[in-house]
Length: 155
Ligand code: HEC
Image 1 (cartoon, rainbow, N blue to C red):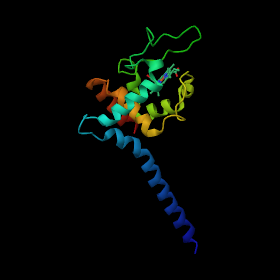
Image 2 (image 1 turned 30 degrees about the vertical axis):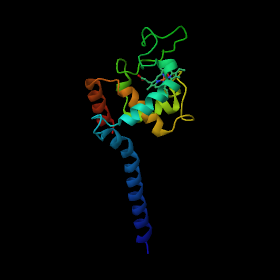
Image 3 (image 1 turned 135 degrees about the horizontal axis):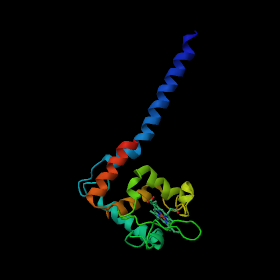
Image 4 (image 1 turned 90 degrees about the vertical axis):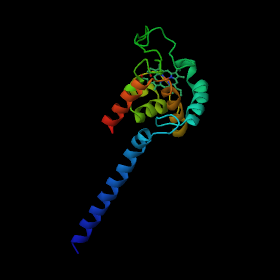
């Protein structure tokens, strides 16, 4: 009789562990998969979709080639705000693993006292990933490999 609750708790803990494991895996398996067309985690269809969304939602601040529009993305303005940085691999977006990039796009700069608006209302996760695929397609292989390593460390 007294053993039954303990057994139930054990089962519950195992189930939680399993679900947490699944949740932690979704983003890490996505970036780890290698697509035949690109040799990276995303397909050319994702790049194309992401390009359209990027022009619609992001280019106004980040530039139509994700090149950034400010002269120097590291220099804050008179109010102490950072300009929208390039996302084409020349700034530091590659320091962020996939889950963090996704979170910045969904929730915006409020995460780190920045100015960028969040897009969770306009872009679902699949669309946010397509946008990431688009700007990552502008990264050279060295930057992309460095980014993969950062993902491995964080997952
Ligand atoms: C209104 C201007 C604006 C728009 C529109 C905008 N951003 Fe930003 N973004 C910023 C600013 C400013 C920053 C710098 C950090 C901050 O202040 O939030 C930033 C930072 C980022 C970063 C972090 C880069 C890094 O190196 O840490 C990513 C990723 C990003 N933006 C992606 C996007 C994507 C994708 C879109 C379109 C869905 C988008 N942004 C639309 C202004 C914008």
